[in-house]
Image (cartoon, rainbow, N blue to C red; front, side, top):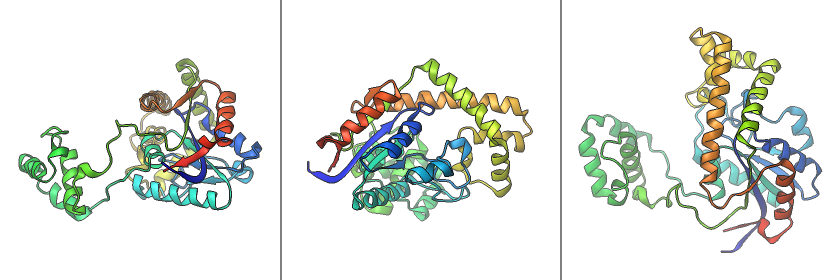
Length: 309
């Protein structure tokens, strides 16, 4: 393994753990030339600002942020597109002599970038043809077993979604689906050091509720109303907080019921994110923002701060 030459570290953890504040303060005050690459599947959408805790205009004037506002919320944005955009942003930072701080809680996007996943492409025409044959699931599974027995043995013969996706890749790329990486459950050697910020469950739950109610005071309902009027794509409208408030406009659900649901779903999201990150044995956990900031600067000031490829 060789050093890539660019300095980078990642700050991970569940929503509302305080990652963004730590990252911003470091980018503003550190002498290491830190620029922030936001690893979040929803901050890529323009106009989804308050409910994604996106950096404000004032914050963006103080520090350099990347990977925000890439597409309209009517568009779909894949993990492959995000990976490409993140690579380009990191290369730009390194070309200018800066250090990259990846910050965010979207686990799959983070793994794609930090572990440099080889991600299979999309083949819409192939997929459409396979979906037209979804009633022949047994035959589709047998085709997959012939083309890629390693992939077939790892999935249930009744898992329509996975079978079609694996066949789509086999037929569209000409490569076995199983040849793309070793899977999310396998953790390779450390390519980018990851620091995990993890408050207690109690603190996290309290922060999530206080933050969401503060967002409501800041105009989140009006933001969602405007997005609903302009239209939102399938992915954007699934964002936690937005999805629940959309139900107020589209289904007539009482507002306070929607707010309570959004807080509950945000807490569930935080637990899923915690579970995702704690499975990765490479993450170094800290419990306070000061510890996180100190460790990030230590890493970036040492040989461990270089991306290893």
